[in-house]
Image (cartoon, rainbow, N blue to C red; front, side, top):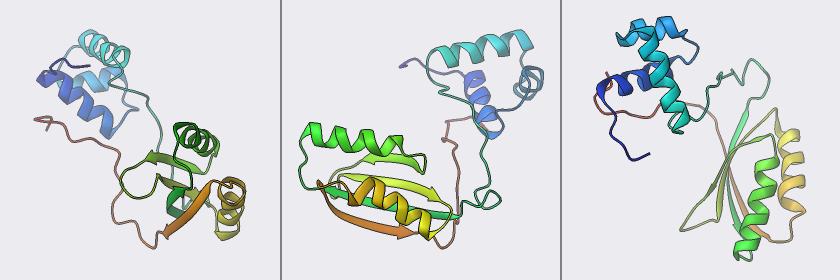
Length: 158
């Protein structure tokens, strides 16, 4: 979508990033538009793919999924079919929250969240150790999360 966003669109997007559970009435009041205008604009943003989805962000600690790791994966062969095959396997794993193809350096960076070290070990056995094309794995384990945010900075939204 290469169109310009006006101030109302930006305020809507900012408000939804802060709390996607707002009712249409509450969202309209927060953005200072009528409920009908609000509904129409949000639908347009959804239809255009600007709003990809609305989700609840859960507490990993309260749900017992407290081991967070960043993995750098380097493959032995980087042909398109090898990259696609690894990516397809990685995105099927529930513990893989994010899968990025990167350059330069490793071929992939994965963000994974598991319950504990035995769960991490099981994941690496399934996803990495059994793959003959995985040449190198570098794991970074989180000891503290200083910031976590899903919001995108929007010009003039606040």
